[in-house]
Amino acid sequence: MSNVTVIGTQWGDEGKGKIVDWLASRADIVVRFQGGHNAGHTLVVGDQVYKLSLLPSGLVRGKIGVIGNGVVVDPKALMTEIDRVTAQGLVVTPETLWIAENAPLILPVHGALDRAREAARGEHKIGTTGRGIGPAYEDKVARRAIRICDLAEPETLNWKLDELLLHHNTLLAGLGAETFTKGQLKDFLTEITPRLLPFSCQVWDRLDEARRAGRRILFEGAQAVMLDVDHGTYPYVTSSNTVAAVAASGSGVSPSSVGFVLGIAKAYTTRVGEGPFPTELHDQTGRTLGERGHEFGTVTGRPRRCGWFDAVLIRRAVRVGGVSGIALTKLDVLDGLDEISICVGYELDGKKIETFPSAPGAQARVKPVYETMPGWKETTAGARSWAELPAQAIKYVRRIEELIEAPVTLLSTSPERDDTILMRDPFED
Image 1 (cartoon, rainbow, N blue to C red):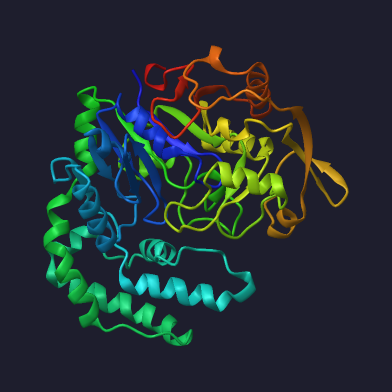
Image 2: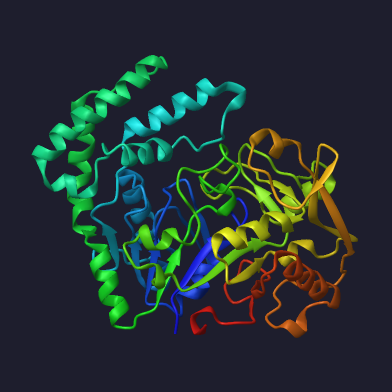
């Protein structure tokens, strides 16, 4: 029996929510270990649609949900989300939701700085959600973050707010943005503290107890490897590490607890926001993929850019992300296409290369080298066994496995949780 860690292998929005929800039926505890409320999962359960940003997907399955210390928490956004899903019938209490007491908080000053800096970048904007995730991580690294445990110590909170405002107000004033008073932040925290503190605990200790008791833990990543602050398309990335190794440090468990690493990939590629996208399609095929796949960001509502499957990027994600197997989603979106292309390499300044470069200029100049396969006319939507798939769809999946050097262990054929084909159970690895 193994724990399982789920990460995205593209630029996010690969359908992690459904896969985590499906796997959560086999788990006891589901842990978020990085990111903030700039990530989102959409779960379809019968006639209910749950849109989650901070809450672990396992709560929909009645499992214990954990927000680890690697997550930056906007307390107002979290409470709004709790209220919304509670109204939909979910039970969210300190018994079902554990939040690491050492998790950093996102304050209103963080969002203000995020938006002011993005506006100042002009044509070089990164495409952030403006929700303060980056500035909150900066404060964590600079050792001036307000953490949940600080809310229980008024004297600590008092001097830490002074230090925080000294830094942020200087930046805001320099950008011509409105600054904050200590009273404003105190009022914000005073309002939220009574609701937030009951959920806080020493998550690392509880997870260790769960591990010793043999309970199954599912670690749920946000964003994806190509948005990793070290390994992604920097600077058009998120502000945290998104690879599976962070599941350990972001929740306070040992590296051996990460278990089977399941990488999620769409059968094509999408991206929200700015940054390089070698296989992006600006033609009718790209629009068709977007329309069929309902490609709009869960959190932002922004239309996603769409393109062909990029095997080079995912092979890189498999290697740096420690991926044991792939869950391939949205295969049904490709139904009916006459031809389907896969990016198998790049050209850069007239030379063939087999890996994605790190420098932003080079990333913007790479051109995809495609391999084209016949499509299929039959439908894959709703298939629940390998035998139900068209022969050409099976060939497409097999070719992907060869190119990315990893097995497809799970296949999703619709947003419905049970329209899933399992080739290998991650929890039994």
